[in-house]
Image 1 (spheres, rainbow, N blue to C red):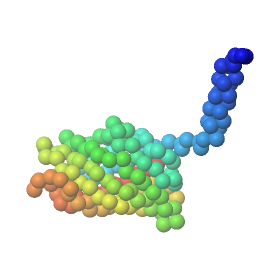
Image 2: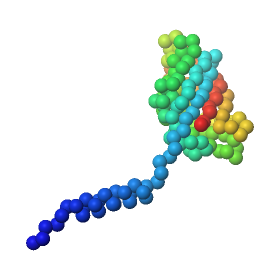
Image 3: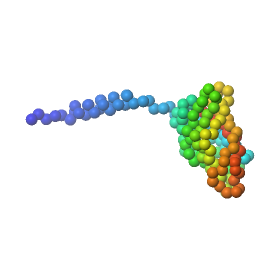
Image 4: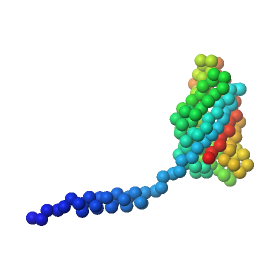
Length: 157
Protein backbone atom coordinates (compact mmCIF):
# COMPACT_ATOMS: atom_id res chain seq x y z
CA UNK A 1 0.00 0.00 0.00
CA UNK A 2 1.54 3.34 -1.01
CA UNK A 3 2.23 5.78 1.78
CA UNK A 4 0.77 9.32 1.52
CA UNK A 5 3.28 12.03 2.17
CA UNK A 6 2.23 14.70 4.70
CA UNK A 7 3.87 17.38 2.53
CA UNK A 8 0.97 17.86 0.08
CA UNK A 9 -1.45 18.21 3.01
CA UNK A 10 0.81 20.86 4.57
CA UNK A 11 1.02 22.73 1.26
CA UNK A 12 -2.78 22.57 0.86
CA UNK A 13 -3.38 23.87 4.41
CA UNK A 14 -0.86 26.66 3.85
CA UNK A 15 -2.57 27.67 0.60
CA UNK A 16 -5.98 27.69 2.29
CA UNK A 17 -4.64 29.83 5.11
CA UNK A 18 -3.17 32.35 2.67
CA UNK A 19 -6.40 32.41 0.68
CA UNK A 20 -8.35 33.08 3.88
CA UNK A 21 -6.04 35.95 4.80
CA UNK A 22 -6.32 37.48 1.36
CA UNK A 23 -10.12 37.22 1.43
CA UNK A 24 -10.52 38.74 4.92
CA UNK A 25 -11.50 42.41 5.11
CA UNK A 26 -8.77 44.92 5.79
CA UNK A 27 -8.46 46.02 9.39
CA UNK A 28 -9.92 49.42 10.20
CA UNK A 29 -7.38 52.20 10.48
CA UNK A 30 -6.93 53.42 14.03
CA UNK A 31 -7.32 57.07 14.75
CA UNK A 32 -6.73 59.35 17.70
CA UNK A 33 -8.65 61.92 19.70
CA UNK A 34 -7.48 64.87 21.78
CA UNK A 35 -9.79 66.76 24.06
CA UNK A 36 -10.59 68.95 27.00
CA UNK A 37 -13.42 69.12 29.45
CA UNK A 38 -14.27 71.78 32.02
CA UNK A 39 -16.90 71.06 34.64
CA UNK A 40 -17.84 73.29 37.54
CA UNK A 41 -14.63 75.28 37.05
CA UNK A 42 -12.30 72.24 36.99
CA UNK A 43 -10.41 71.50 33.75
CA UNK A 44 -9.01 68.24 32.37
CA UNK A 45 -7.25 67.57 29.05
CA UNK A 46 -5.94 64.54 27.16
CA UNK A 47 -4.07 63.70 23.99
CA UNK A 48 -3.66 60.61 21.84
CA UNK A 49 -6.71 58.63 22.98
CA UNK A 50 -6.85 55.67 20.60
CA UNK A 51 -9.98 55.23 18.48
CA UNK A 52 -11.04 52.07 16.67
CA UNK A 53 -11.34 53.86 13.31
CA UNK A 54 -10.96 57.30 11.78
CA UNK A 55 -13.59 60.02 11.47
CA UNK A 56 -16.13 60.16 9.95
CA UNK A 57 -16.57 56.41 10.40
CA UNK A 58 -18.39 55.30 13.54
CA UNK A 59 -15.68 54.54 16.08
CA UNK A 60 -15.06 53.55 19.67
CA UNK A 61 -12.81 55.55 21.99
CA UNK A 62 -10.46 53.39 24.07
CA UNK A 63 -10.85 54.45 27.70
CA UNK A 64 -7.50 52.97 28.79
CA UNK A 65 -5.54 55.15 26.35
CA UNK A 66 -7.62 58.23 27.19
CA UNK A 67 -7.20 57.71 30.95
CA UNK A 68 -3.44 57.15 30.54
CA UNK A 69 -3.11 60.59 28.95
CA UNK A 70 -5.67 62.46 31.08
CA UNK A 71 -4.45 65.36 33.19
CA UNK A 72 -6.57 67.54 35.46
CA UNK A 73 -5.74 70.81 37.21
CA UNK A 74 -6.02 71.66 40.89
CA UNK A 75 -5.77 68.18 42.41
CA UNK A 76 -8.85 66.92 40.60
CA UNK A 77 -8.75 63.44 39.07
CA UNK A 78 -11.09 62.00 36.48
CA UNK A 79 -11.63 58.61 34.90
CA UNK A 80 -13.60 57.58 31.82
CA UNK A 81 -15.40 54.39 32.90
CA UNK A 82 -16.53 53.14 29.48
CA UNK A 83 -15.47 52.91 25.82
CA UNK A 84 -17.95 55.28 24.16
CA UNK A 85 -19.07 54.74 20.59
CA UNK A 86 -19.07 57.95 18.56
CA UNK A 87 -21.07 58.40 15.36
CA UNK A 88 -20.65 61.27 12.91
CA UNK A 89 -23.34 63.15 11.01
CA UNK A 90 -21.39 65.29 8.55
CA UNK A 91 -24.54 66.74 6.99
CA UNK A 92 -25.61 68.15 10.37
CA UNK A 93 -22.03 68.81 11.51
CA UNK A 94 -22.42 66.81 14.71
CA UNK A 95 -21.13 63.82 16.61
CA UNK A 96 -23.08 61.70 19.09
CA UNK A 97 -21.60 59.52 21.84
CA UNK A 98 -23.79 56.61 22.90
CA UNK A 99 -22.86 56.67 26.60
CA UNK A 100 -20.43 58.80 28.60
CA UNK A 101 -19.64 57.45 32.07
CA UNK A 102 -17.17 59.65 33.96
CA UNK A 103 -16.00 59.67 37.58
CA UNK A 104 -14.49 62.83 39.04
CA UNK A 105 -12.73 63.04 42.40
CA UNK A 106 -12.12 66.39 44.04
CA UNK A 107 -11.09 66.96 47.66
CA UNK A 108 -11.70 63.27 48.40
CA UNK A 109 -15.27 63.28 47.07
CA UNK A 110 -16.02 61.09 44.06
CA UNK A 111 -18.95 61.91 41.80
CA UNK A 112 -19.96 59.72 38.88
CA UNK A 113 -21.81 61.20 35.93
CA UNK A 114 -23.49 59.29 33.15
CA UNK A 115 -25.28 60.50 30.05
CA UNK A 116 -26.62 58.90 26.90
CA UNK A 117 -26.73 60.25 23.36
CA UNK A 118 -24.58 63.30 24.08
CA UNK A 119 -23.88 65.40 21.00
CA UNK A 120 -21.36 68.06 20.02
CA UNK A 121 -21.27 70.55 17.14
CA UNK A 122 -18.48 70.63 14.56
CA UNK A 123 -16.26 73.72 14.30
CA UNK A 124 -16.48 74.66 10.60
CA UNK A 125 -15.06 72.00 8.28
CA UNK A 126 -12.63 70.62 10.87
CA UNK A 127 -12.82 67.44 12.94
CA UNK A 128 -13.04 69.53 16.12
CA UNK A 129 -16.35 69.40 17.98
CA UNK A 130 -17.57 71.46 20.95
CA UNK A 131 -20.39 71.00 23.42
CA UNK A 132 -21.90 72.72 26.45
CA UNK A 133 -24.16 70.31 28.30
CA UNK A 134 -25.55 69.40 31.71
CA UNK A 135 -24.74 65.84 32.74
CA UNK A 136 -26.85 64.20 35.47
CA UNK A 137 -25.30 62.66 38.59
CA UNK A 138 -25.29 58.87 38.45
CA UNK A 139 -23.63 58.13 41.81
CA UNK A 140 -22.39 60.33 44.62
CA UNK A 141 -23.43 62.22 47.69
CA UNK A 142 -24.95 65.61 48.33
CA UNK A 143 -21.59 67.32 47.73
CA UNK A 144 -21.75 66.36 44.05
CA UNK A 145 -23.31 68.93 41.73
CA UNK A 146 -26.40 67.51 40.04
CA UNK A 147 -26.30 68.10 37.16
CA UNK A 148 -22.73 69.08 36.32
CA UNK A 149 -22.42 71.84 33.74
CA UNK A 150 -19.77 70.79 31.25
CA UNK A 151 -17.93 72.46 28.36
CA UNK A 152 -16.02 70.01 26.18
CA UNK A 153 -13.94 69.98 23.02
CA UNK A 154 -12.88 66.94 20.97
CA UNK A 155 -10.50 66.78 18.02
CA UNK A 156 -10.36 63.62 15.92
CA UNK A 157 -7.33 62.87 13.79
